[in-house]
Length: 167
Image (cartoon, rainbow, N blue to C red; front, top):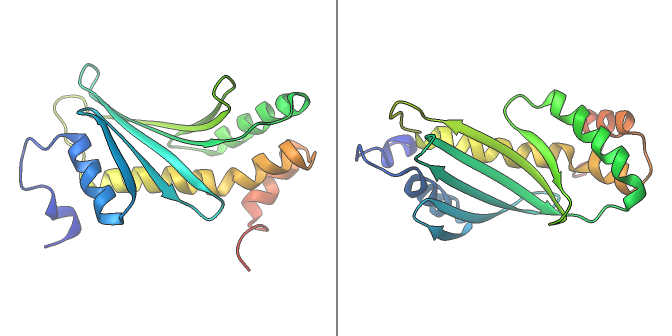
């Protein structure tokens, strides 16, 4: 049985149940916070990302939030915000934002499932992978702007150029 067929036996599979099965499949640490919400930790190359998925029946949206801690110096925040604007222009599926009060860098994405549509396991798995990949790709740019005083444009070009990574 294919991975995508494994979880589609029931028509009434709740989106968060599906996410839980995917987390188990990948052996990710997770916590089912509520019937409509799950939190998990996904290991990346640069760091471990905290990912939360929540289902809103009201607007039929599966929301993904992928975060990582950081505490940029106050004087570097304007450059950080400029960097996020450049990055967001390059992101097609989601967007980055900075939550100052929580000291979190956040990648957000919402999957609209209006009209009783059902998300498939491959679709949800891709959504989670895309979030982690976006964070991994732009993490170096965010760090270079925040801690190495690089300009936003050069930091993003460096991150996209793949100059950082495993040897």
